[in-house]
Amino acid sequence: MFNRSRCLTPPVVTVFIVLFAITPGAQPSWVDAYREPSAKLIAESMSSRFAWERLALLGDTFGNRLSGSQNLEDAIDWAVAEMKKDGLENVRKEPVKVPHWVRGMESVEIVSPGRHPLVMLGLGNSVGTPPEGVEADLLVVRSFQELDTAGDRVRGKIVLFNVPFTTYGETVQYRASGPSRAAALGAAAMLVRSVGPAGLRTPHTGSLRYADDQPRIPAAAITAEDADRLQRMQNRGTVVRLRLKMEAKFLPDAQSYNVIGEIRGSERPEEVVVLGGHFDSWDVGTGSTDDGGGCVVTWEAMRLMKRLNLRPKRTVRVVLWTNEENGLRGGLAYLEKYKPQIDNHVLMLESDGGVMSPRGFGFSGSDTARSTVMQIASLLREIRVDRIGPSGGGADIGPTVEAGRIPAMSLDDDGNYFLVHHTPADTVDKIDPESMSRASAAIAVIAYVIADMPERLR
Ligand SMILES: [Zn+2]
Image (cartoon, rainbow, N blue to C red):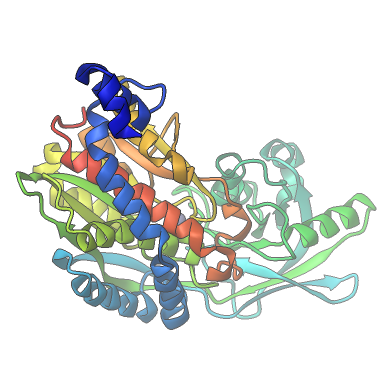
């Protein structure tokens, strides 16, 4: 077919036909030079379950990985050894002092009318209760406005914020600021309806943020089902009395580490494309969705390049940050250490929104950089990870991105991340192997092309 058309058409026209055959409807561009390595990265990733198997191994072996725990440090040492086995370069641990909060035993129960235990999880960084617990009448409110309207009726009560989940950004404020807002009016303790879509009576933990000028009261999450039950009881005029017991406390700061591995650039090694996720998790489940999966797919992007002997002109660096969940000290330590080289950061990409159903990337940067990224994303059409959203970033890359005004990306995922994150149900079975292979391939292509293309992304 090709030979026959060449016989019948002048050579210049043939070249045009060939290029159009490769990219139907598009003008030939610099991106065409990356079709072959991209196809190889995609084929390599899609041909195995390596990423999923690695995530399963991480969760099955080390379990959850809260800052200060032995689990986290053992997992960090394992990651270092595995990265070396993958052939990554300059594999290292960079020290970070992290807060060491421990949950201890905890419970909440209705003590009147009748005795009924509720399912709960204390909020990260909460203070504990006295050993006998805090026993008080319940006051349910559906907003900060309802709390403020209640005024004097808040004093001495256990306040429950019963706010159904809309978006994480909107609903999380009740978990983060609720304890101090309630304490400001004299509440004895705070409960929050779990920040996530209603699941199967599963509580979600997460961190709170005490205001400096308010008393610190113990705080915990209960399930959507129990929050609705308490709301119904209050609406009927029932006086509900609760007892909350929490042993939560801080121990002295602990030693932890960011884990780093690289593929050094062949021509401009000082210029760096950074990928990563956070390796710590809450102390329930196995932190497979939040954020073991994000760590493994960014790490996998490096392994795929290495396996195919693809060494880009610039350096690609994977960072598994420590302590995102209850301190962000890993992300802050990275900025501190790399501040002198901040201008050499070409792009930072974080995956911390799940790897259940990858659809593309969020991007924040200049319009020129956006159009470059969109051209690169066209290489990901066949694996359906080619959508480029209006903004990208991540908690761990945030401090460095902001300080250096660095283009930032995040993996965008359509899966039900908030249903399982911060819960005992955050385990690897919620994630399918093909999704992880698609995510890994997409990150590998984005990272490889941006690290290798002739002009720096600006
Ligand atoms: Zn996370």
